[in-house]
Length: 492
Ligand code: NAD
Figure 1: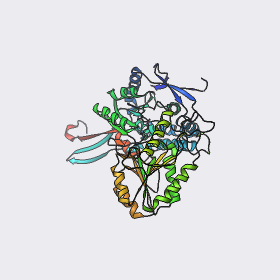
Figure 2 (figure 1 turned 90 degrees about the vertical axis):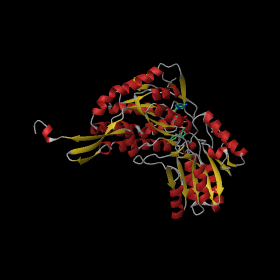
Figure 3 (figure 1 turned 180 degrees about the horizontal axis):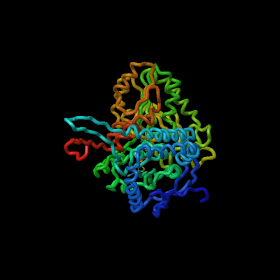
Figure 4 (figure 1 turned 45 degrees about the vertical axis):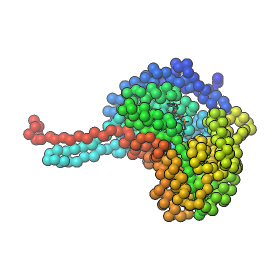
């Protein structure tokens, strides 16, 4: 149909249509319109993609790092020039508001900027005279062909937690986007082509599980970065490492926010609402469980219900909209199921998003912000990642109990605290078992020059994405001891 995007693979510097018969619609979750069709690439196409990356490797790793990052500088400028176009595409295929999409595009670019420092970061170190006349040096070399498997909720940004660092370090790369949102990367790869990366350095292959398995089983791929749900993260980690690959696999989350009685309730509720309902709750750092302490219970509950009920829901391209849809109709049904389940577990539904229909967007998969009060802490709803705009409230008497509940959870992606007390904040920072933390902050997303941490069932691996962790992940260290005795040297 007119205006629908043809989703192609990008292999060895060529745009190629997949020949697969297995095809899915890409749907705008706000309007229900078909944006394009994605074919789930065949095993042969996956092999061709990896072969292209293998072919480009020898020359790319010999290209000086100072030269490699010139492509990233060009890409950064092209991304800036196309900032609005990319952000609009993110909104259209993923549903988040344009403002949220702009935030995503900015984070994407920041990772390109951060990776431009690789020529210095990639330096090794050395010791002269580890024994008489013997020197030892450590140099960093690329790992080889690497791949990223991405989730739907950040179609542009997530691959860039890894990709710029990988190629700056001299690796060649394969990207497998989520089949639900393949359009943004079509545009980003057009810009990478314009930036002039040599053919085969960056490759794009579309598909779902079979494509992932093809990548995991190909011995030419030396390192895999994955971001998605916990069961798949676990699966990818075990299958990749069983094949001797490096793997870093980020999984799901259930992020608690503790509200102390001394917090500024108005500010805490406003920021918590942005955390819980921003991106329609489809952020791995979304606050999805609030634990109020003592007297915070009533004022916070009142304020958050007010914030939930007044949030403007609609199509994200409309600038006044504050929350878009969830990704699919199936996702909407799943989120609604969890609201019902919360009720069955004894919670009171203080704001109810079930059955949401937005005028003019009747085919959209909208769920209004929902608040479940008094969830049992060990129940299904309080312990499951819902990935929608549903905030559960739990009330406890003291900070020790709040931290105990957090540490009993299976995930460790993020926890936040709102308080006026330095002592409470420090205790929380010291004791809560999570990899990303916010103190009077609702979404503690690390900048590109910090690692995107995550503990427990939110992460499988050792080295995280972004910054120095990415440098470590995408290089292997070679330690050389050398001696050059004068008497062994013919002309000196
Ligand atoms: P998902 O696990 O369904 O899919 C992620 C990727 O894995 C996709 O590319 C998909 O094609 C592929 N995939 C799906 N099922 C597979 C299977 N059985 N075998 C092999 N590959 C498979 O995740 P999603 O729904 O796209 O994304 C949402 C999830 O991602 C949430 O759980 C969210 O918390 C998580 N997430 C985590 C982080 C983080 O930093 N920890 C960041 C963003 C998203």
